[in-house]
Length: 192
Image (cartoon, rainbow, N blue to C red; front, side, top):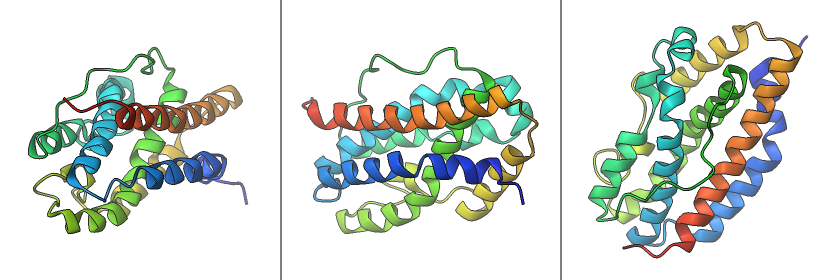
C-alpha cells in the first residue's frame, strides 16, 4: 500500500519534532505563568506568521474551514490574560511560499493541535484553561481528532507532482525550524 502524504510528512518530521519537544521541556513553560507566557509569545509569533496562509483564497478552496483554524487571535487574547506584551515580529517569517510548501507549514500547525490536548492539562495547575490564558490550546470546534482527520483526508487527497511533494516536505521541515527559532527568541527576550 502506498504511504499517505500525511504519514510521510509525519515520518520526515519525527526528528525535528522530537528536538522541538526537548527544547520546549528545557524551557519548563509550566513552571510559572511568566514562563508559560513566553511559550504563548512563541505560539503567537508562529500563528501570526501563518495568518496569510490560513487566509489564502487558493488554500481556502482546498480546506474550506481554514480561516477558522488559525489560532493567532486566541494566542493574542492569552497574552492579554497573562499580562504579557504582544511580541514584535521576528525577521525570517515565511514569505512567498508555494502552495505545496504552504501545505507542509499547515500540516505542522494543524498537527500541533493534537499535542495541545496534553499541554492544556498541564496549564490547569497554573489556573489556566480554554477560557483564560490558554485559549490557543483549546479543543477546536468538532474536536481535535475529527479536525485532524478532516484536514489530513483533504491533504492526502490532493494531486501533487513529485516537485510539489518535495516542496511540501520542505515546508513541514521549515515550520519546525521556524517554531524552534521563535521559541528560542521568546525565552531569550526579556518581557516588557
